[in-house]
Image 1 (tube, rainbow, N blue to C red):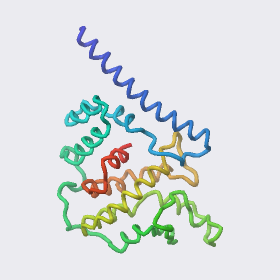
Image 2: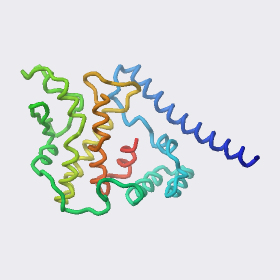
Image 3: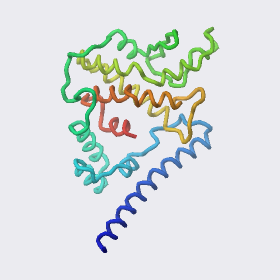
Image 4: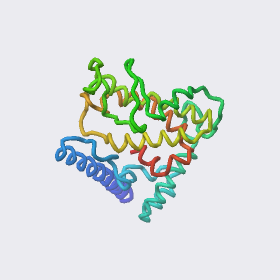
Amino acid sequence: MHSLNLFAAHAWASATSRFRSLASAWLAMAVLVFTTGQARAAGPVLSDANLFAALNLDYPGLEVVKANVAAGDLAAAKASLATYLQRRTNVAWWWDPHAVTTNVGYNQTSADQMVSGYVFYSGIGYTFPGGDIDWFYNVTKDPGNSYPDNNEWQWQLNRMGEWRNLGDTYWGTSNENYAVAWVRQLRNWLTSCPVPTTKQNVTPSAWRTIESGVRMGGNWHDAYHRFLHSPSFTDQDVCDYLK
């Protein structure tokens, strides 16, 4: 009974610690929104330390990660976590990310357009200057254009439907430029669009529930598994993706 009580106490303390770490991150985000009036300034919401506090480091395969966290070496922890995710075989996807092959279907012209920052939604194409996508921009609301106002244009931008083909083209061509472009866009979005504290079913929003569902329904995961072994997708990028 004494051992059982100790185990229960340890589990409760661990869960409480994780909750406090997450709560601190969300509180910081709430303060940012309250003081600035917007949530575009900084992301991801979770720090590296809070990410590891939220993970179950007792999960089989994460022994090295746990040891690095315990030693306070977060750089090594991030590297070992990325290595674990790259090597694990117990989680299936539609294809094996370890079996990289050029035998995939892809549209290179479309991929090149995405690399250059060209997107096409609701019958309207637009090229972001320098290829730097502004995830809150809506071409139909730009006073310099004469398009009918359409909230869907910006919402669909945040579904990242092009990322699937970008990943397919990376495998099909073995051209690292596609990985560089995807990582650049991922970093841009994670920085510009941190997780909000409430539903954002308004315009402009990167976090309307349907866009969030579409992203998690495959677009992000397909890209993640295509680029998982790219040298351009760094340990930090992998951890930020998890956040």
